Amino acid sequence: ELSNQIDDYVASYEPEDQLEWSIVLSEIKAFIDSDSPVRVLDAVNSEVTLTHRLTNLTTPPLEKTPAMDLLLEEIIIVGNRQDQSKFSELTMDMFRILQTLEREPVDEASALPTATPTATSTNSSKRENPHKQMLFRPNIDTLLTYLTCSWKDVQVPHGVLLVYLSCDEVKFPIDIQRHVQGYDSGGVVAGKKNEVSFNDRFSIEMQCLYPGDLTVYTRKPLFVIVDSDNSTIFQELLSPFGCPLVVLMSPEQTPTYLQELHPLRGSLYTLFLHCPLAAFCSISSIDNLPFGLWEIGLTYVDRFMAEASRLLCRNCTDEQILQFFGDDFLRLLILRHIFCSAVLSLHKSFQSKMYQPSANRVQLSMDSDHLNHMVLDLANHLGVQHDFFTK
Image (tube, rainbow, N blue to C red; front, top):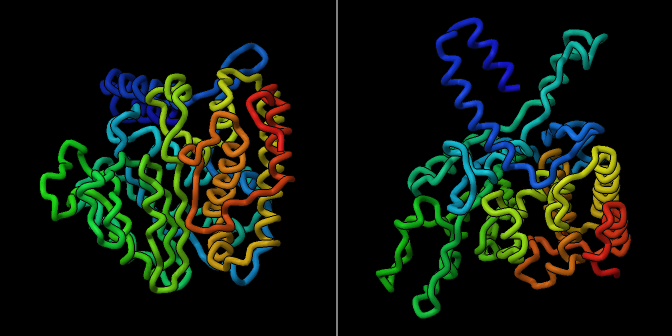
C-alpha cells in the first residue's frame, strides 16, 4: 500500500527523491518483517501478507441493548519500551495497537455498487476511525497536556477516551515507598528512563505516570490498557465520579524461553490484542504455518470470540462492561483480552500469576469450561496440545 503510494508520488512530483524514498521503504519493510512472529505461507512457500485492521468480520455480531451506548472517540498511544525494535518514533507495540484501532479501508464503489449517494455517505460515517495521538517517550508535561486535550474533545455522555500505555516500569524500593493513594506503588516511565531517580526519599518521581494521575480523567468514560512489567498497580485506579472505567493489564512477566525466542519483537500481551492467533503460535514456538492451517485456526479463534461475546452478554451483571461492549473496537479488545487470559491459564509455561493478564472488572476474568475446550481444540488443530493442561 505504502509502496504504491510512493511510486505514484515519485512519478507525479519528485522523481529525484526516489532513492531516499527507497531507503525509507526498505527500513519500514525491515521493521514490519520483525513484526511477524509467525510466517503464513502459501502453496509455493511465499509469505502471505496479512491485515489486522477492523472489518465487519473481525468482531462477532451483537444485538445492542440501550445500555451499550458508549463510542470510542479519542485515543492516546504512549510508547516507551527500551527493549523493542522501532522505526523512527514508532515502537513495535505502538505499531501493533495502531493497526488494531484502525478500520480496514473500503472501496465505496465496489463495496456498495447500487448504493445511493445518501446511503454511501451514511456508511462512510460509520467507518470513521477514532482520533489518535501517538506519543513516543513523551516527558510528563507533554503527556498530561495531550491527555487533557483529548479528554476535552470527548463528547459527553457517550464518548470514550482510550489510553494505551506500553512503558517500562518504575517500582519504588520497599524502604522508600510512599503512602499516597494512587502514587505509593510506583508507575510507568513516560520519558527517558535515565531521567528517573529516587534520590529524594520524601518525594515522588515527577517524570513518571501514576494511577493517581489518571483519576481526573475518570470524569468521563475511560478505557485504559497498560502493557508494562508494573501493570497491576493500575488496579488502584478508581472512578470516584461514577463514570464507566475499564482497565486491562498485561502480565508483568513472560517466561524466559519466549524472551529468548523473540527478542525485541514487542510485548506478548499487545500481540494478543493485535492478532490472537499469531500470539497463540508465538507461545507454542510455531514459526511457519501453511495458509490453509492459518485460515482454519482463525475460525477456531472466531468461534471463541463469538461464544465469549454470547456468555458475557448473557451473564454479565457489570453494567460498565456492557456500556463499553457496544463499541466495535472496545468489544474487540475485551474479547481478545478474555482469549489471552484463557490461553495463558491453560498453557503449562504460564501458570505463575505474574504470567497472567488481569483487569479491574472481575467479570472480565471468565472461567468457562466451554471456552477452555475451544482453546484446546485450537491447540489440537495446530498440533501443540502437549503444551496445554486439559481441564
